[in-house]
Image (cartoon, rainbow, N blue to C red; front, side, top):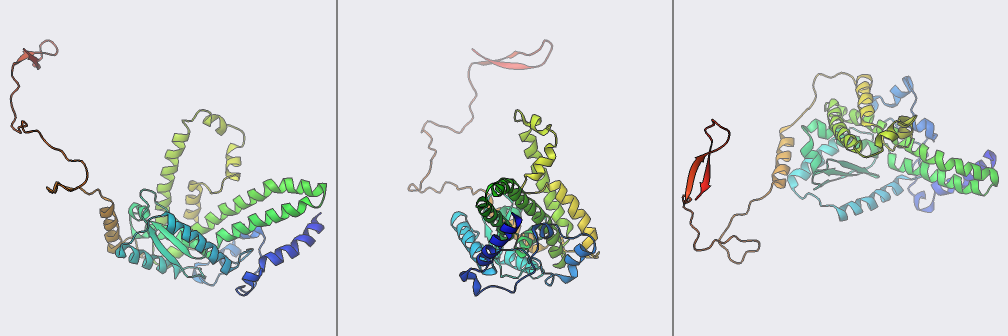
Length: 375
């Protein structure tokens, strides 16, 4: 069965990876990594060399098993970005856009990214998020700028999203998903043994993709603190952002715990292991622990870090002012729209005493409390 699959899959994948639309844009063939090797970099010296902060831009981050060429990845990102632009409100304030573009491009210049970036700011309300789309399209929510306590914290989150783009995590995950789909289709044609392989692959395939996505999140954390560090920012600031996310998760879990039957599911044998296996993202608490260890392992000590700037506080204040409610006062214009309060001619603003009221003792016996009684 393995021999048949190898013979059939090899030409299929070769033709799929080098389609006519990508032939003209095909980059030099990178070294192909297996999903396990790609998702779990070697320990010790091999990992230290792969993530050597002094070699940023020359480490081959993002190379490996990928069925998408750089051109196809860019086209995918353009389509997603077009959908974002149609369904979201963009910030048009030149002060905000100019600042965020300079900040993001500063981090891009200290990263492993090999594509140009397009950066936009979304008027997002109360959700502090950022989106790094394939091909170099970066969206920053205005709520993220407002929620950040300083420029270093904002830079850490942006660096994390730039790391996803630089490492090409999205298309590499899609490549693994597509590979399992092709393997399952071919296995169906190879008889009963192939059907058994397809049934096993229907579980193992998605789990391997989920595992790769979780490992990609860990890698983006490591690359993010390296990019922020290389740009001069305190890498600890990303931990502050994750601590805020952890607080949100704790509150959410407390709400879920009130659902009937929730505790019963959590008490099942190996519940935590199964939950992690089927999860797309790692626990924030685990991410925090890993980053703390990686900061001391991969980043040389430095005396000075950028924590905050006056420009960041100016931009944050501008966004806060734009989100503040506006009080419209009565102007005397009868043609204006909206509710109008009118008073009757008998209304008088003078405070009048209420007639026929007599103060009598009230409350507990012996107290000095009085109440008014109508006569």
